Structure formats: structure tokens, C-alpha cells
Amino acid sequence: MRRPGLSGLVVAALIAVACGGQDGGGGATPGATPGGNGEQPTPAARQELVVAYGADQFQLELNKKRLGMYPLNANICEPPVQLTEDFQVAPLLATDWEYVGENTYRFTLREGVTFHDGSELTAEDAEYSIDLTTEEPETNYSFLDAGSATATGDMQLEITPTQQNVRLIDQMTHPTYSVMPSGTDPTVEPVCTGPFRFVEYVENDHLTVERNDDYWGEPAQLERITFRFIPDAATRVLALQSQEVDAIADVDRAQVSSLRQQSGVKVVTAPPGQVIVLYIAQRGSDGSEKITADPAVRRAIAHAIDREGLVNGVLDGNAEVVSTVNPPSVLGERADRIEGVAHDPERARRVLDEAGWTQPGGGQVRSKAGQPLALTMIYDSSRVSADVAQYVQAQLAEVGIQADIEQLDKAAYQERIDTGQYDLDIEAPNQNDSNPAFLLALRWYSKSKVRNAQYVSIGPAYDALIDQALSEPDREEVKRIAAEAMQLLVDEEVGTVPLAGTFRIYAVSEKVQGFEPHPSGINQSWATVWLSE
Image (tube, rainbow, N blue to C red; front, side):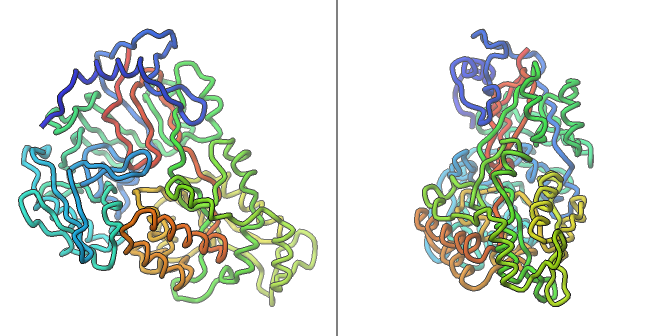
């Protein structure tokens, strides 16, 4: 089934001339005429795009079954519902859904959809695909097991989580829940329903897709996309400048200003879809308390960090100061309830003094009962730059807290957070779905399937609020509960420190048209993108 309309490239060209929008950071408008002279751009004869991303994360064990889906979404696969740019749920493979009671959602699937192998989409395929996600606990954050999804008709699916979770519909926007034919092995070749079909994957080098001409919706504009894996940010920029690639993702913020001045390049940004946060582990894998279990230490850490200095200095204004752990827009006006801990180094020193963490000589590391206030800090180098970690380290040193940075590759980093071998962890978790309590339930909830939640969870009162959020059907009430939980996490217990809400930054050739960056990077669509001459 194909939506009626004009030829895709003709429509795109008309829209490019007629429409405009802001790039969120002063760059050129996606789809605008390159010369700015009002002339309609002409589609190039060859519609093949090359995009440079960072390190290949499909090689990680927990992502092998999500090839082309997560964290790089190549638009091969589609989940039942999709996440809009304002974090709402919209139909995709499911045209309708309803909560039918007893912790169960019923989905009605779209008629006339075919997979890339020509077979027709059925509810049995959706059941099989949901079952696949339950085999890897780290990727199953909706509390599902192998019996949770049931095909109750040819095009009707019911899903019942193992614990109360009426936020399931929000979570079904995640690419992890993409639907594939029964019996498919996604680690070999992802066969799905998306606007692009899988061509080739070479580990640590590239992933290539081509247009699915039998797509159930409006066909993609591009004929082919090659996603190249280039871990080094500077090398990605050089590849764009030399025209080896047409677009680059995750632009280093230090290079944004110079790229904006470069002829033939557009810098395109999306509103914050992720927040850089400082996780504070309170216990180790054996349950023993860490130094950071001391509330005074956690509060002093928060008081020591100048978040405005981080945003305006290290991040060069390509971020916003926020007090929430998710994009404030997800909570709406409720986000104002979370104040954050104010930057006040003198207060930090006083809090530590009163708790017995003394500093005998100027500039020395504090200690208590012979134990130095020395912490191990790690960070996710695929999402957080080293200068952010160094900035936090310097801020803590000013109040007598030693933070030893350990730079790790993605696999080693994952191992450390899974086993609790850290005190501080800087990461930038993405708002992957429309659930206002998504990150709260995923990262700090003691019942979460994510392994490192056990080290950073903050107690029964917080867990009780998350239980409420997961069982509350009214979205506005969930926002209220989520804000209350976040206030407890950030303001009262200081279980984490939100550092900055970051823009998602791309740089593209002026020939790239129709690109609209999604705040949630894993939900990025490439179907509207095309190349001009």
C-alpha cells in the first residue's frame, strides 16, 4: 500500500523552496536553496548519500541483534509506533492501540505491509520479534518475557508485561521493538519493513542500505545510503571537507564555529534530546558502600560544578543548562519543579568540613579517618568528550575532591559500569521514547533490567514513585510523578548531577536537502533526504 502523491523528489524540491525552519544553532536551514537566491535546487542524477558516524557499536554483544536498528537507525526496520520530534507517540506499523485492562495493550497492525523478503506482515511476526528482545536483559526495559506478546488475530497483537507497566505504548517507539518475519536472525541480515533495505555490513567500516521500492508508505528519496564508521571526530570533519562523505554526525562542539564559516557546509542541530549527567555510584557489586554513599560528598560534588561554565565554555554554547535528567520538554511546565544544586564551591567546602572530610593544607586532597577523598571517574567516550571529564575533574579538585579519570573504549566502559567499578560516571543518555519516566525507570530504578542501576539507585521512596509512574495511565499525572521522582533524585538525594542538555549536531554538504534532525538520534529518519546538483 503506497500513499498517493507527487513524485518524491518533485515534492521535496517544492518543499525546499516553500518551507523554512531554524537549525537550533544558527546554521543553514535544512532543504534551503544552497545559494540563497530563491532558485529551486535541482535533484542530482545520482541519489547516493554517505554519512560518517562514530565508532561501530553493532559489534557490542548487546547490539548484535539490533543491526541497523540501534544505536544507529538506518531505517531498515520499524517498531509498532514511532516517536515524533516533540516526543509524542504516532502510528507506524500499528494503526491503533488501546489499553484493555489487566496490564495489557492491544495493537491493531497495518494491513498490506510487506517485509523486504516479500512476505506479508502478521501479528505472529510481531510476537516473534517481541520475544527476541526478551533474550537480552540489557535491551528489555519494558518488563517483558517470552510469553508477554500474543497474536490474538491475523493483525491483532496483545502485550502484557510481567509487572505493572501501562507506559508500554511509549516504550514501543524504541527501534529495539522493530518487527521482522518469524524465524529471522537479525545478526545475519535484518529483514524488516522500513523505507530502506539491508545491503551490506562490514564490522568497524560501514553499513550500506538501499531504497525499498515496495515500501508501504511514501518511498525514500535516496537510492542508497552508506553509513561509515569513523571514531575520531576530527577525521570525520576532514572526510566532509574532502567530500569523501556528504554528512557527519556527532560533530565535535569545538569545531562547530569553524564549520559554520566554511563554504559549502551547513551545520544542522536539533533541540536537546539527551542530557549529559554525572552518575554517582553509592555501592559496589558486593553491596558494600562507597565513599559516595555519604550524602555530604554527593552534595559537595554537585555544589562544586559550574554548569553554566561548562555550557558556555567547554561546550561553546552548543547546549543548555538544565536541572532535569531528561530533556525538559518531556516534562513540560513540571520541569520547573526541579531546581538542581546551585554552583557554590564555598558551600561545598563547608559541607565537607562539617562531615569530617578535612583538608589540612591548601590544595591537598581531603581525607576522613585516614581515607582520602579520591574517586574513580569514567565516561562514555562515544557520547562525551574528554574535555567535559577534565572540566569536572578540575572543578572537584578546587574543593579538595580527587577524581581520577580513566578513559576506556566502549567495550571496557560497558564492562566497568555493568560491574560497578567506578565512583563517578559521565554519560549522555538519550530520551529514546515518549515516556516522561523513561530514564528514571531505566537508570535509577532498583528493579530496572539495566545492570548498573543497582549501583546508583537511591532507595524505596524513589522506587515507589516509579512504580506509580509505570501504573498510571494518565500522561499528565505521569509527568507530575516523574517530576516528583526527579526532584528526589536531583535536589534531595543528589543521586546524580545533570550537567547540560546538548544539541544533536550534524554537518552536511550544501547539496544535502530535506534533512530534519530528530532530538532523539535513534529515531532519525533518512526517508526525506535527497541530494541536489
